Length: 332
Image (cartoon, rainbow, N blue to C red; front, side, top):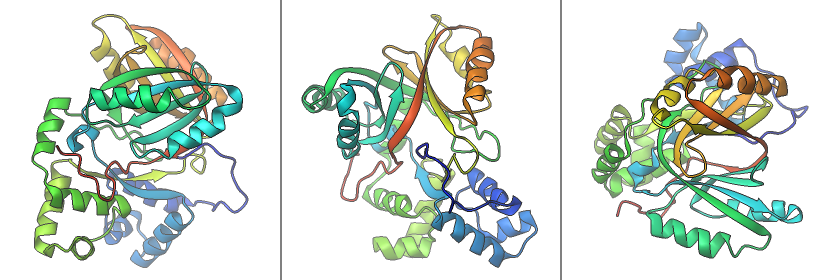
């Protein structure tokens, strides 16, 4: 997700066709220009010009999403950090530079900084990170870790409603990951750089045969190992408030609550955890009043939910889906 920020004077105004293109790409980030043109009733060149403008102006960012466990990360975590107030910016900047941390939020609430998308090969690597890296960082007062054991929902849609994704369980994801080789990883890395590039471009970049690349790409997409998406700037879409909810759930009700959460209007991601919270949720709201309604009306109506703790995200220092580094192999 893109950091909350004020709207600039040079932010482009979006018309119905811009929004239509974004909606088309939210369901398939690799959707072709001709297909979008037919759906919107405009010329293919108009779609091309508008799409290039949306990308150049950073209204949208093409990306790929891969479940971290598929890539061999068996200990993903959410880490909450309490920091001396004067050191919050320095600590956030420092952790944002770390390779295995993919989302860094500065928050108002229980934690001053939340590290999401914190990916580790195993529990030993996670423990070493917390005890050696974070605990010795100047300004850090306390660290609280929650192991993530599953995703009940993940979506990147902000225009065309909520796009639900049925998540496979961790063992299924790890089994899928075991079938990937370095050629698959090379294609995924290139898709991270540009998720819309053609099989020919991928073959040129990886040095592989074009037909082999096309077959591998089709398998990655058809089996939902890789999901081509676009990340839209929430502010330009009218969402000025981003928040996290830490949810405590009645025993035996986690699955039921997860299903109910999927129907919430502005819910983007719902993560099952072991730790302080049973479920952590991220949502986008158009204003504080909508956030208030989300807590007091929408969440309050969920059966089995015992407690809600709200953290307002003041700034996002880092947000990336580039889980594979240029020379990194995580499979083993």
